[in-house]
Image (cartoon, rainbow, N blue to C red; front, side):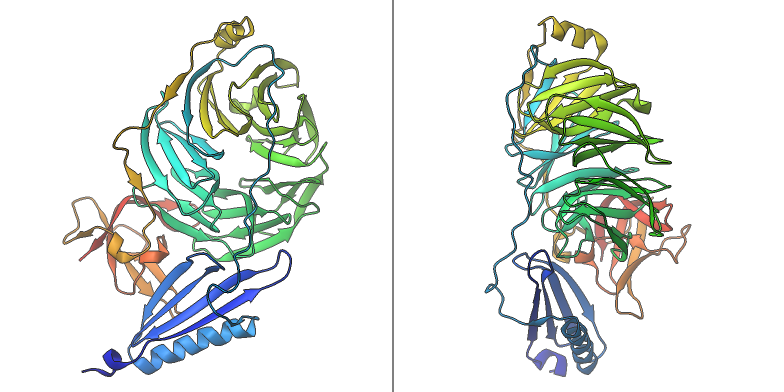
Length: 486
């Protein structure tokens, strides 16, 4: 019998818990023969797991001791799992009064998710909605429910970066939902209470309760952080020229490389939501307005006045029309210069997020509904006269496909050979002990890393993916299914 097989597993559990809004996280290291398993995350959560295998028991024990020592030097201390309570996650507290509009919007269909919903994204093929119960549903544009993703905690927001869809989750992670196997693409520090996020060319931008902006790259490595002048940062938008951070004192723009503040503009009230077009950002505020700010200078170019606090806003392409949803279950449309064109009731709660696409306005509301409104000129004119279609209530399919994040290698389908046209990738442990993923198949830059689920990374393991796409940041993203190559 080998020495590795007779070694008794040992576990070291540490916690770092600071007062107020400081860190509240754990770090656990287990040595079992040649294998070192690290589990870490927010106190009270399951956490993320990383496993490494070493050539000898002595090397495994030395690596574990080094990891523990590093954490102790940072202030972690031995603790007993379960004795310290999890820190409460901020849930957005909103009120929703009845609409004062004289007419109701022409709602084509409505899908009730069962819990208050914040996340929305609409693309050429699908509508996505995420709610506070951790459910993300995909629907076609006519309201047919296609699939459900079940995440471990409430969904704060849904964002797109080219073809990829990401969900910011209250468990402190950001999940890639672009394939049937959702996975944690980013693991945000346990002391960051996510309010909103945006992803641009693989860079994750996170705004939080304390008014911080944190930027993380595609390999989940911290790049830079700034604390803005205000707290409760419900807005972050990013492009090539800047990251736009909205908080209770206005909007601040930062250089995308972390080089410093470009401009700061106070808004009329604290920012509760943000939208962007090519040359402008739009901030919906608690003082009943949406304000358009020039991206180049931060100058306020137009103000769109509503009758209650603005929970959400959006525009048609180029900002020709500006839409807003308020705290009184109403939705507005303005022309570009600020003239109000109409105000209508939503027929079901206040819109916490919204998006316009192809003549339709999609809303997610306080009652947990995804609502599709016909925003064409003819439909709105008829609605103002009291003629609206009967909304169709969308029902769940009897056998709806449901997908959950893989938390272990065993959860991944195994294949014995790579299908024609697929791509093979391999997990490789670098000199710093981190497991990276590189492409094995020909035709790719083998020095680039692949954004890949950490929960299923093992040194030497190979996986088959349907396709890889090069991102501007110099890495590859997975398209399609992930299967382990036996």
